[in-house]
Structures are given as C-alpha cells and as structure tokens.
Image 1 (tube, rainbow, N blue to C red):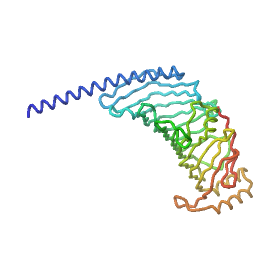
Image 2: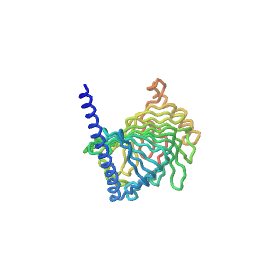
Image 3: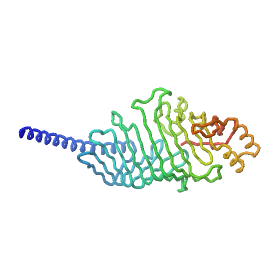
Image 4: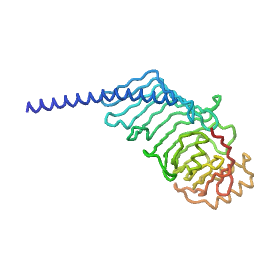
Length: 341
C-alpha cells in the first residue's frame, strides 16, 4: 500500500511538472505570437500598439492584459482607428481556439462609414472570439454597453443602452452566390437617434436583426468593392427583422441588394402593428395628404390578420425601390441618395 501511494504521488508530481512545462512553453509561444502578429500587421500598414503587455494566469488560464491598446489602419479600404484603456484576452490551456475578451474601460472607434468619419464610443465590452483550425478569427460574440455615435465635428448621431453583435464565417470562402460569406446578428437596446427632423415615431428603438452576406466578399472595400460584389449577384438575406419604434412594430424577413447606382433595393414579408397610428402621424407631419392617409388605412385594413403574438397585424410586402419605401402599393417615404466611399 505504501509503495502504491509513493508511485501515485510520483505520478502526480510528474504530471504536474509536465503540465507546468507545457504552460510556460506555450506562454512563451503566445508572447512571441502576439508580438509577431503586431509586427506583421504593421508591415501591412496597420499600426498595432500598446503601452504595456503581460501574460499570466498559471495554471488554469492564459491571460493577456494590454494597457492602452490601439489599432490604426488609415490606408485600409475602410479606414479605422480603435483605442482602449485596458483589454484582457483569456483562453483555457485545453481550448486555445476560444478566446474570451473583456474591456471594462471606455473605448473609441473612428471608422469611415458611407460619407463621413464616424466615432463610436463604448463604456465597456466583453465577448468571445472563436478561431478556426488555422487559428484565424472565425466568429465573434460581443456585448457593448452604453454606445454613443457621433459624426464630423462631434455632432451626436445616436445613443444606445446596449448592443449585441455576432459574426461568423465559414472556414472555406464561398465560391457561389448561394453560399453565405458572413452570417451576422445585431440586437440594439434603447436606441435613441438624434435626427434633425420631426418623425411620426417616438421614444427609444429596439432592433433585432439576423441574416447573412451571400456570395464572395471582394477584398477591395469602398464603392469599387461594393460594385464588384453587387455585379456578382451578392445580396443580404435577412432571416429575422424586428423594429419596435412607437407606435409601430415591424417583424419580417426578406432580401436586400444594390441597384446599378449602388442604391439599396429589397423586398420583405412583414407583419406590422400600429400602421393606423403611423399613417395618422405621417399626415400630421405633412408627409402624406390626409385623404391619402385615409385611403391607405382603408386599403391596409383589408390586409389585417392575426399575427404571431395573437394581436391584429397588417400582413403586407415592404419594398425598397427607386429610392423610396413602399408598404404594399403605398409609398411611405423617399430614401436619401447614398454616396459610398
């Protein structure tokens, strides 16, 4: 019995020593890998910096902590600059392809969106990054708290209480337009846009969106990349759409694409609550003539059915074409011309 106990103890010591050696060897490789990645990105024109970096967590985790990290890519197709205060990345020694991250200090992202540089500020964020078999980023699940978006000159565009974002791509890039290049999900809680016009809707907005980018996404960004993707038949397939903005609630699914002038076109199957109040509000603001609003309510009343939640809804197609939004045959609003950069 005593010999058995000694042998078992020796085995435990041996295993502990082997595991410790594995942890410290892997920690050195991870340090070198992070430094090598930053150097490789810099050679490609993306500046990756931090004030200090430590790696600890022995024995049950690899924990990389960055102080004042930043990423800047001015020459990219979509220019961006990100800055944070304190960022922690953590992986389990037996699962290096799942990386959890947490940034509990404010961070900012300056990104070239559509026509202007937009700044997005987040109070904190956390989530999970998934790696594929080649240890390349393949998925993202992230939660951002208290976001604020502002445009040129610092003018506020919108605020949100929270945003949930999910992204995933196949390990093998798609070779046809029938395969998704990127699947996505977006949930926005208590979004309050800052618009310079009166609207027939009020209060915070709730958005829940899921879908996929179909077809190969060109490496080139901006207008040229969008044109190439569109000409190849690329589309956005929306599998779930929820827009809740008092007094209207829209649920549906559909497809978005770009026309020859790279303006959005699309068609959705929808269930709409509060259509009558929405048309009344549009008439009050002068968006519709009172007689057109009355005719629209009469026409849409013929499409009222019981919805998914048991309440009466209008089941009607919602379409985007010729730079206008239509509900059935009724034109709701004009869309602004988008200039891509």
